Length: 401
Image (cartoon, rainbow, N blue to C red; front, side, top):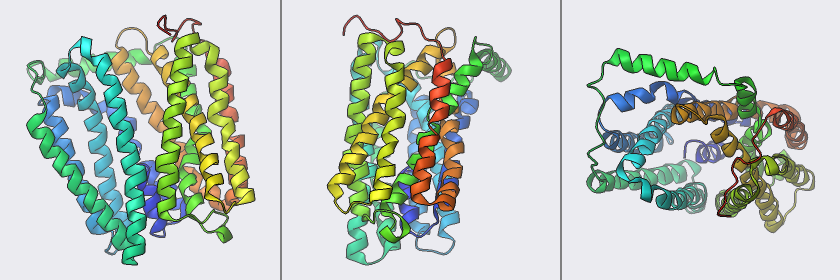
């Protein structure tokens, strides 16, 4: 809702590409800095408490967005509530990941990873696909874009609050889920400082950080402008799709392709190892961006051509993203790997945030055709940093595949 649906919503409400990209990219910030307040979640209250509380706050944030859309200064006030949702969601991530390991024993954790992943994909299809399609239908039936999106976000708020109540009553209460407040705050802060600083002392950390920041340099810009390109009229250089069509192509067709790409990437990496598949995956996450150059120059009227093009790009992204995630796991191996992985995810969010902020301005300066050519040129840093990393040939290889 915060990172994807907001882009479509603001575009439909008449916000410029420059402002959409700049301000929605700022919403990545809570995920960038979440490692800094993760100790607070451990020290105060239980993981269960934080999960339910953050879901309540997210529901309140959705209500705030729904109520401010029809009013004056909606852009400013809705961004405030989206930022509240982003901060709450990042905090929820910290608590939920910890709770998962506490509430489920080791023998069942691997089994439930698949279930977690499945419901994550269902949530993505529901948000990026079904809710956007609902907003599109309401735009047509109500005749008001503001009313349509206010109702859509309001419905989401109601569903979220119902899920919060459900979790309040059904989530287990494991004995191990206890706050660590009895530990001295100073000792916790000291331990956090040692863990944090040790990350930057790892061998080759400069190359690791560069890889995390630049591997998706091109994709970070493309993802912010993909939906505006699909929605903008043909005269403005876009494809002129309706809100409903964008919800279907990106939230359903694209997401299914993204998932399949990730599954194929995981299977092949497990069979031959990350090092073997690194360059094909680097190519897969970058070269399919060519489809947007094709779409911007050809501007096809057939939605089937658009569906195929988006499916190709998203499959490549899912396949190539496998290398990114596996490399982060490889880079943090050793003591404090859980905390170090959290730091990596902060850099990962920063790598999406900074290029995304400028993407709207670049697009408005260049136009869609030249912007997508620029996106292709922006793949060069990703190829360059991939040439610098050193990976154990056996890493990622599984004997079961």
